[in-house]
Length: 413
Ligand SMILES: *Cc1c(COP(=O)(O)O)cnc(C)c1O
Image (cartoon, rainbow, N blue to C red):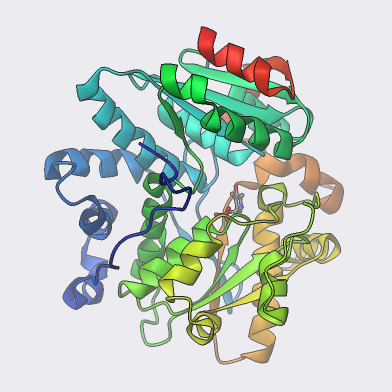
């Protein structure tokens, strides 16, 4: 219920559970639902009964997560077949159903407040749509999200309120942080955050690394997994899965120009710069919240940590050129985030020719058709569901980047 711990740190498991070796060996025999229950149960303990957890998980993993071959060396784990076409559906669906379960008994209305640069908002809106006892308020920067993303935020209505902020993503985030710290609001409202610092969004992101292992044919030669990284929640979930017994042990954090972590690997100094806008906008994060969790997994031992994953910084130019060449040579359409991962993986495989790798394709290319079409000079096919969604697009409620305006909005909700 509380995204952040009272001391302003992040919640982290007291100990990392070790999964049964037999279960891992027999993974192909298990359904995705039963894998997910097995993975999450040690973290849930007794606070949700088994049958309720089963239902929550079934509603979370009810879409395909196929492993698709791009070429002999590289496959793509497509995480974009959920309702809002991005991997954030997994965490958001799990979190919303947990909150729905807890809200059911205590009759207290909750407001989920979230700032989004695009994908988080859509996944949270969809996950919480019509959940009893919960209202959702999403702040997004005017003119800086794609058409598909904006329609996902604004077309639902009901308990979902989208605020179009005249400012940047950082302004939205500042307003949200301000609301969480406001004593007056704290007294009169129950506010909950829904970004990846919330454990209920972060922990279920482990699931698809296990689904990947289930589909990986050559069990004697585990893949290197390249994760397009922004706030580092996704890769951190992979590292946690690995620490609890998943046989995948090599990861690459692929970053765009927002390269705080790659620079940290090189220089040993953690020094965020101002956020730089790029083509892979969901990764435009300069001070990744989940980085401390990665340090924690490796007990702050720099050597252990550097052995477990590599980092790479990919320019927009390289991203475009990968997107085009993979489309032309392999007939596979990447989205800009997947293209960052592909570029990093490809360069890793050049120096490690015995290995094979997987990229996490974190969003459907149609979400970024406005970026892709000028690169490929071809139309990105728009699925029927997305066409219908675009028609329902409405304007958000316009608001200045003013914390007081948000405060009065919340009090009147
Ligand atoms: C959020 C997002 C990312 C970055 O994931 P993190 O967990 O923040 O590192 C990458 N790609 C897409 C499409 C996203 O929406």
